[in-house]
Image 1 (cartoon, rainbow, N blue to C red):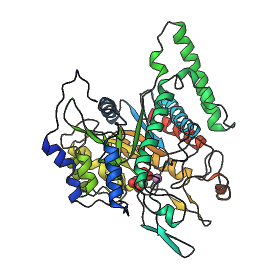
Image 2: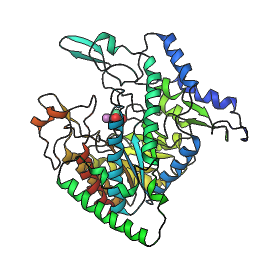
Image 3: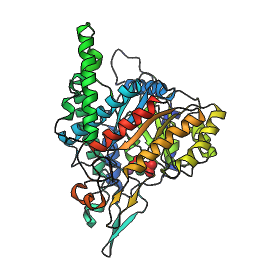
Length: 457
Ligand code: PEP
Ligand code: CO
């Protein structure tokens, strides 16, 4: 996609470029106020001169895979931090997260016998929408933390002031994260013959033992195929895609480039980007801007979504009804999904559109403990996943993926699971700066459960 002397270069139409900036005349919610406008312009210009993080060819390939998932011929597994941080973009943390997604994918593939599309909420998940612009602690009010690409988490005036240099640092951190993701998944680490070694260092636990059992079965199957002379190149490398919420216009716009083959724009900040529940207004800047890029897009749908909202989003973001273009990520809450999802599925079945349906069983299930910890109950997460599969079974539509906040580490942020994390234990390893994540073991447990549901799909 980058210019190559042998390529035919298709220049962008002037109207395409003008279209990419149309959002500037619309309301863009959840944007930081940069105190220094000149510094923000400089950061944007610098980003615009940087190489793309992903390539158009990869993005197109992903769109085709998502189309298969929408038809039930594949399944999307999307997972990672609520908010990545610069400090935690270390080799160990990235490896553990990739490893957890790979392990979940093994469980799902084995259980469902369909290809699993692996995607990280990684290499760009540095900006967060917030319910309030400010935060007050002990009588002091400061701007809310909006993610490392905007300001610092530390509760001081200096740290909480939005700094556009962070956009550029975000780009570089995304680049090194993506580099490591690619190295791990293309360089032998993801070889299926390593299924056992991915489990090293984790305590004996029912989910882990179950995983070990499955790894043994896979080993046997691989040995059998090896003995029969099968070629294993396909098992050695894994495609692992990068995704994040496209929230900050001052990052997404300069990262958007015109593909030299086709003259069309791609947001090269990630393979897949999604629009959050708080920025999906049909007349808003985010929907308009993203309607103009070729990437496969996600939109979060909360429990108040009406069929009309949904159809307007389809018409704007996927007017050609292109397979794989549009993914609806529902985040209804365990108590609401059985009421809120069926009317949408019923309406869409009549209408004939076929977006990919993915469940996010995290964002509708938040609660705060009396001691002030933001948490989620593992049982609620599981219940929402079950409600998602039930609703699709009843409607005759296809449950095509799962979107989770997880970490590869042994944190104590969500309640329950087979390690029985309780309120009193939350404080021991609570590391998230934003929403609580499933830990390694809870993630594996969830994968086994989803595999069962998929087997019955
Ligand atoms: C998120 O995915 O971290 C998020 C903020 O989700 P939502 O837009 O669904 O609230
Ligand atoms: Co979150």
